[in-house]
Length: 68
Image 1 (cartoon, helix red, strand yellow):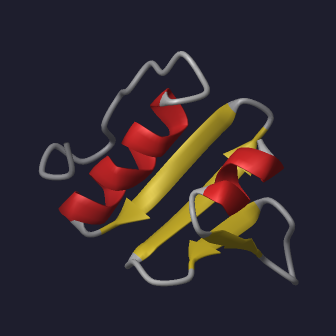
Image 2 (spheres, one colour):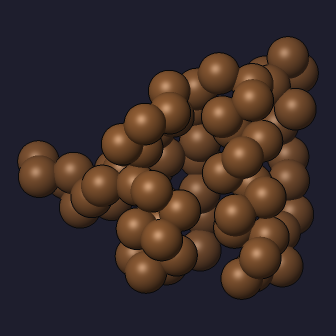
Image 3 (cartoon, one colour):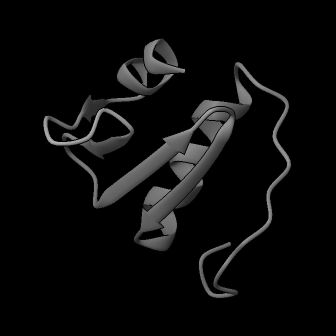
């Protein structure tokens, strides 16, 4: 997962290696095993899902209806 996140433009957190922030976009991701929670602007969240779908089979379940 770390390789996928860094290839997608994310930087691993220093306080918690489970939290990533995107270098250029308004998106933050929390990773626990194969679960990922992404928070950010709608277009940025969609971009992250598309990047993850290139490598993984994704089951998307929005926590907030306005994001997806």
